[in-house]
Amino acid sequence: MNYKDILQNQQKFFATATTLDIGYRIKQLKKLRQLIIKNESRIFKALKQDLKRAKTESYGSEIAPLINEIDFFIKKLPQLAKEKKVRTPLIVSPAKAFQKPVPYGQVLIISPWNFPFDLSLTPLIGAIASGNTVILKPSEYSTASSALIEEMFSNTFANDYITIINGGVDVTTELLKLDFNYIFFIGSTRVGKIVLKAASENLIPTSLELGGKSPCIVDKDANIEVSAKRIAWGKSLNSGQACVSPDYLMVHTSVHDKLIEELKKAFDSLYPNLSEKTKDYSSLINEHHFDRLNSLIDEDKVVYGNLKSKEHLFMSPTIIDNASWDDEIMQDEIFGPLLPVLTFDNFSEMINDLKSRPKPLASYYFGHNKEKQNKLIDEFLTGAICFNDTISHTMNRYLPFGGVGDSGHGKYRFKASFETFSFYKSVQKRSLMEFSLRYPPYKKKYQLIRRFFRFLSK
Ligand code: NAD
Image (cartoon, rainbow, N blue to C red; front, side, top):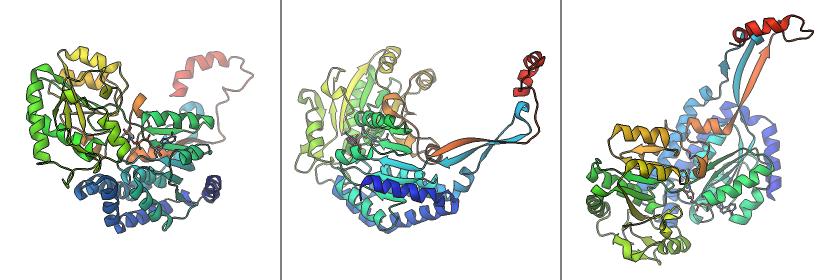
């Protein structure tokens, strides 16, 4: 069946209004919950195959968040899907007015390979909860995970409701020609631009969940020991292949030497005697990414790490000191375990410089000065900012996830997903009684309207 036919079948199914029923949506979410639990050990296996991911990390970053997300919707969906009453000003009274969240219709989700289950199914859960039908295109790089997702869904959900289509650029290019009602893309800024251009052809609304270079600033008053441990963890999680991984360090010169020493100790304590055999350390996704990362390493600047094996797709956390904005490694998102270190002396000058660069998905600041923290909160545009830790803000379900500018637009996860995948329709129901002020002939109404306009519109 070609993609156009699949979409048409989804349109037909959607037109039956089956997905408008909240009970139906909850039933599908429960079915998905069961599907994930039933396939838990196969999910662990696929993640091991694609990324050599440790079971604990797979559970914590893929299975647990999905179950949490589903449970949230099973509990909260009836409340979320309710119409939201608004006031009616005197000028239109008597009337009832509200906003009603309705599904967009047919949603296309395109996902990346780094957390293949979480980043495919989290948006899918939001789309189901909001009453849409879905075509999901997982990444062609995480082959075992993407194949498992396809198998799981094709045996459980009808194609005219949810279809998984695996493939690479050619497949995505074809899908992007179709007239979806919403496109949700997670991936690189480069491909995000391609998606946005394609979506503009049919004026399709989009969410672009992209990446970028997320700065990690360490100031002179930071607790260096704690900072080092938290940075080392954030940089080595999934071997640095995370969209919110601290991309580079911006360190106050006065604490530079101490931080480097503490970072070395922290990496050593997380992964003693690290090698390709270390169970808790993920591999890179493929040879292409190994070569890409390898070409970014300036051997003269390496002060820690640089252990690697192409055969095993292994690359250890590697500190690259004395980096500068001219270095190859500072031109694009690293998306791997390499940690370039830049320094600063003047906080304001450093922030002004960062402000002139592409807007990051996440930013990290280690330091306790309230004034500086407030300056970052108020003046530095970034998808999120986390103080004195890395990545942990993504574990807070009450903080929506998303970027700004170069790191994308739109938010998702939990309530934010429901708001993303629903269109909030404005509804007004008028009674037959009315003021006749708005109708011509106006005669003396002009003066009356001028005098009472504020009062009538309140
Ligand atoms: P990618 O942009 O290369 O690919 C993402 C998806 O787009 C894949 O499904 C791929 O098949 C498809 N694609 C690739 N090239 C395409 C093209 N020319 N036309 C149409 N579709 C195309 O990204 P990736 O390497 O899979 O993932 C890494 C990127 O994703 C990083 O930049 C990372 O920061 C970002 N990311 C963002 C989030 C987030 O939630 N903001 C989460 C994870 C990853």
